[in-house]
Length: 362
Image (cartoon, rainbow, N blue to C red; front, side, top):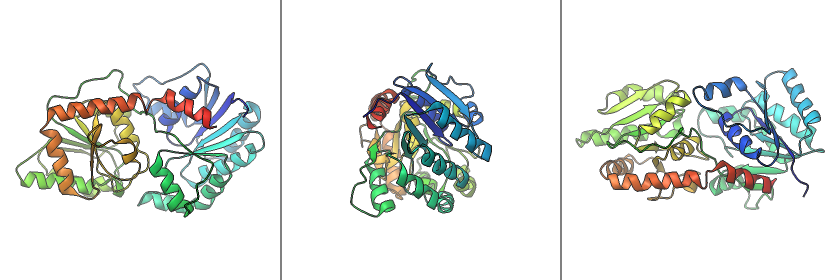
């Protein structure tokens, strides 16, 4: 196989993910990263971007014919050995992916990272339905499909392809750390839990509300911070605010503030009903914080029960309440689990290791 010298990475979403991956890949090849720099700059406000002398960044909003033309010019002038897309969401962006993959097919190896093999319930599924044909077109034509863990591969095989026959183009890649703090800090001595992110139906916010109400009725109140926007936060905000010890912030939280919230937490909660990969999990481990997570989807590929977190059944308020009570009442357990989370971040979720494997898999 020919040596990979130039990689064109295109990321209409997942900007921090794409930047950290591209900076690590630049240790091995020249990388041109195309993304919306206004989004990237907003995500890194107050933080230092990971950069590299062999990494160049080009701006695109992925919305106009002129921007599609510029992508085609990048392919012609940069002459990438690999064209790698972070799979887009949205019809126009999916059209850009289909056109550029077709244009590069004869001159470069093509790849796509599939962050969600099948759409999540709710808004994601409605968006995905509009671009299903374009997504299928692109997935069928690339040389490599990168998925985050065995659970995502199984979703792709069983739920998307509907077959037990493996797709030989599929390769595994881990979701590297996000929102790493400038320096590691010990968890707070008093227990405090955190749930954050886009609050869609599949995130299980209602399960957490049920669990906290169960604890309140039994006379146990815990400090729990819940932060993020979304339809489930709109629906449950008043109910959450009435619970003792609970702070609900129905607003977008900037990345720098999220890092501070993770540092101020003892553990991060992921009571999801379904999951593929999880940036929330990657951020929790990057901050050295253990998790209490549902045993679903890609979460079970990274959460080793009682090693870096606790796994509980989905849609089980009683099990979630019991896990919260156990972790809150056992500082030694919290310390052991948090140490395990930090080890996972430093090993499996290390971007240099991920990039080296990606180079071998191209």
